[in-house]
Length: 211
Ligand code: ADP
Ligand code: 5GP
Image (cartoon, rainbow, N blue to C red; front, side, top):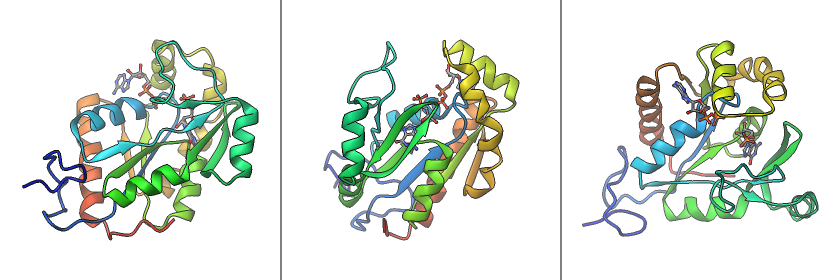
């Protein structure tokens, strides 16, 4: 018998028992650019059919490998501003000179189906969501060192390394406001800790997503 939200025979995450349908959990992943958030999240989403990525809206230019509607919804500033005015976003921020926003209705609809939502957003946005959604759970991804962060951004081919580095100290200073901190040193070990954090979050889930 399937207890998956989509009836595809997906195993329920630990802490959730067959027949015990609950609302999804809002899992907010944040940390400095280049720390490894996408790497950890992408692997998790490939392995776990019980959760879904929240696709943000942004005014940033699309990178070559990115797909509109999969990595982000790429929109112009006018469209973004009118979405703000219509209350479309649960939160939005200007990050590295571009606008980024988390869509409210899409997320709440998915949580209602019982799937968990994974957000990859900046530190201010994460803390903002935490204030609005009492049941959101926050995970901070920390680089092993600032030098290694610069290496990773260069390897990724990032053109705006300096802009991104300006925020790092400020972001790391706020990690105490997150429920979980994962240092992404060795990728395998960090991924194990990331998975365990999500398992723990699911076990403690109180069934609410009040935001
Ligand atoms: P973020 O999403 O936080 O901006 P990414 O996931 O894009 O960061 O990772 C930045 C770069 O670092 C990518 O090239 C990625 O392959 C690499 N990377 C991620 N985790 C590790 C790790 N533990 N060790 C070495 N390189 C890593
Ligand atoms: P990038 O341009 O590298 O994809 O993302 C830059 C930063 O914007 C990252 O820290 C990413 O987590 C953050 N970000 C992506 N989407 C959102 C969003 O919807 N809201 C907020 N506040 N930050 C976001």
